[in-house]
Amino acid sequence: MTTLLMKQMGLTFVLVAGAMSTAMAATSNSFVDDAAQGGITEVEAGKLALEKSSSADVKTFAQHMVTDHTKANQELVALAKKLDIEVPDDAALTDKAKKAILELRDESFDKAYANNQVDAHEKTVELFKKEAASSDNAELKAFAAKTLPTLEAHLKMAKELQAKHDH
Image (cartoon, rainbow, N blue to C red):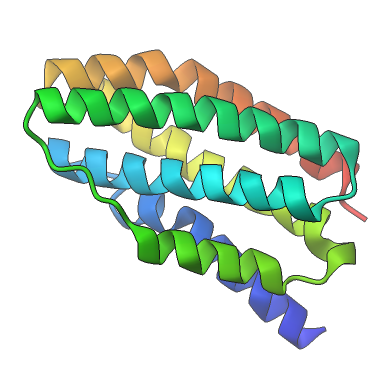
């Protein structure tokens, strides 16, 4: 039980580390770094949920995350390149997310995934709200404002999923 709790806490850390580390979004580069890391992690976590979950609603949500975050990541990369901002390719974070998710026992996977999606999206919504309100770059500010409603919808969906799997 303690080991499972430790693994779940580790997974929570991995999934929200990028967004949580600099939720203030003090510079364009930190916003791009955090948004890219969070997006990469969402896609990878979603792919693993599609593989590991036996629940139809978790798989539907996971596919939604893969599709939406892949699209947002592509838009972010294109915008960052246009603005000459380097986008991190954080393979280490992706590997950590995969390892943490794969270590969870099957019967706890859906609950852990739902809980972590709520945590990750709460942090990401906060990050994007701050960027949309106070970015030093008009194009990143517009990207954050455009993406925010989708992230808020993801948070609502994650909370609904969490309520279904809170047992």
